Length: 299
Length: 305
Image (cartoon, rainbow over all chains, first blue to last red; front, side):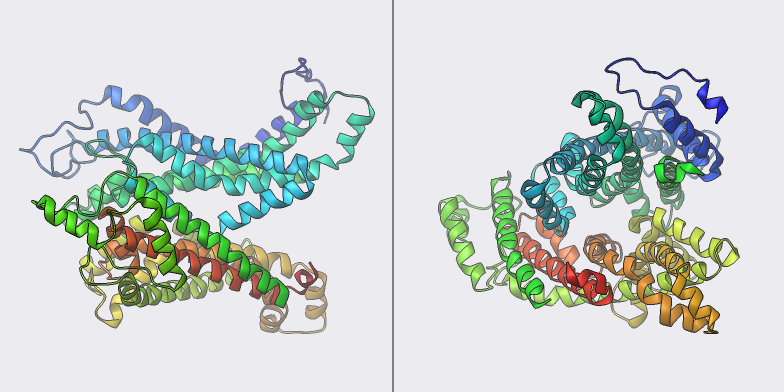
């Protein structure tokens, strides 16, 4: 690939800058995947709308208009209003902030626990690894969602607790993936070669191990976010997520489901938004997996 | 094989003990109590109530008592349903959930395998794209969106089914579709992947070359290996079906154990919460063991590990 060899290598010492060709190739492959690009575009649009949208909205998420009550979509209220006359668009965008925030923060918690646990198990190997992974197997088999429900019921419905509870459930698969990668990498020829060339451990880890683990981790994180958002919506649907007058997509769907017979738009718009987000995240995750799969990068 | 089963079986005992202990202390140390919501309870009555259920004793003694009963399979009296034991309540409510789960699993396997096989036989054709796009939609529509939407379309607009309830045979249709739909979509994707991998194997080409019919190739040769991913997915799927049943039973007002569990947690019905958690945990662990046994049986390569 002549056009790549002209690129200067970003080789600042100590900087965990991943090798240029892997990410450049990945981006090139990702751009070819139309569904993944659509997913990325939809997600960016949604994120921007949710972040700055409420600043421009004429209505706040909690502002009631009891005289108006529930009204179908109109020029004043693009997505209609709920029974208390609150603007659905404003509530949807505000709820999007919460839902996306939960998705990202809880995934970060899961990522931290999972990567640390998996890396330790993979590096140490032997008996420690066997015991650590057996624990993961056992926890895997437990009804952990039930514990999240209990946590949320018994210890108040604080949003920080939501992050931690969900993150604590979702780290298991991440730990398995990272451990597998670390185990496989330890024995790879290029790592041995780096050892043989006398590179320091720190440099081997930063320059050779991390870029190779990063791919699967990024992919799996993208696929964890929809799972996390789903769990948040599930909890909100049971009345255990964010509390009124705050909204999240799950709580809007809950309200919508209760009123769907008379005011179907209250169910349809939040439901579609959540579905679109999950759809985009799944496609982006699939696309990233194809793009970052190092074994497939030869073709 | 027998050693594997016995070892796994004995492993469940400490696991269940840890679950019981963790849940017990989590529930007890949380703020609030089972009699908080009852209005105007005189302090004497409250004291009597607490004495009746042993709540006035030190926590460690309550724990030992509970564990003592638990060893005999006694889950204790419910705090909310007067004069009822948790065992009674579970044995009444669980069959309903079991039936729902059975239908949902049937929907998941029947629809999912059919779609997956259809897609795998002719990849990258219309019979691949249509079922797989439907499956993607199924994965992105969570139960609590799917359920209300199905009610809106099939019960309210078309009037084919009752929107709520669990009284007639046709009341099973919408809840089973809601709960099973997501898993059907997942099974479709997994079986497509598994079958595609199998159908590209040399022994399949040999079978085809020797003149085996398409049906014979698919069902006799490829299916056994192709559904392995589906079988390993069944373990987590059952756990998911159980948590999904909380939502579906709430949406359709089905008197099953899932709805009981959610109300029990809200009501601080300590023994009911503990009993349900332990019951579900045992169920999930045993079903996972069953799935592992089926996997080993289907995949001879795993027998020697």
